[in-house]
Length: 281
Image 1: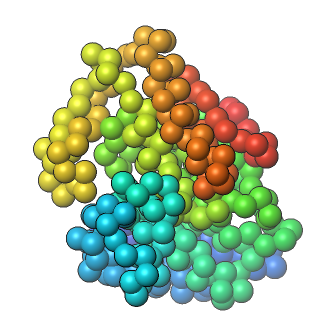
Image 2: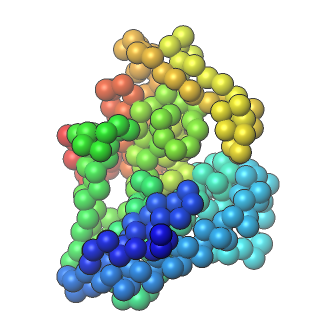
């Protein structure tokens, strides 16, 4: 099967290895599948680059030299991880960085509205007169209802939306079902979502944790404990975990690293959204 497939005028698919990415590009109100397909070729190249840098990406970002001559996708992941917290590895931001690179490629070809979805990490490039609406959903069936939605317009300072949680693709030390973050780019949103989700900690007996290396030997988290199962939490522990996640998110919000977030723990929700972009379900 071809790794790049034009599914429709409005949707190009990159399906290769662990990556499932969709790219949509428009210019002048019309879909531009050729622009999207050219961006998809760059996305494939970046997959090879990231594979070459796999061991580098697993090191904590405070150990790495940001001045080193790095490929753009690796440099983007490193910068995002360092902006959120030096304890993060660039691996926490690679999906977002890959989405950013594809979105920039389409925009450089003349697209004025670009939406790239890299496994749930979304890069947006919106010119004047365009907009986008991003649904925020907890893990589950494809037809599950949205928890919330985010309306994005040019000039909002939102170029990326990413989500994380204990049931997501990445291992997490927290118990949040959903942490969605929006930021200036998808790499920063990706890293911040991972960081905030791991901040939603709980020591309740309903939470089962194991060393990351025993869950996934390839994990960059080593022997740090990660969440494997979360039973039903009483309201007190739910609110405590939600408060811990908010305490992790607030400094990033107040310093402008992120422009907003939405957090949910077993039906309890909290958010930071100064500009009123969030629409609750």
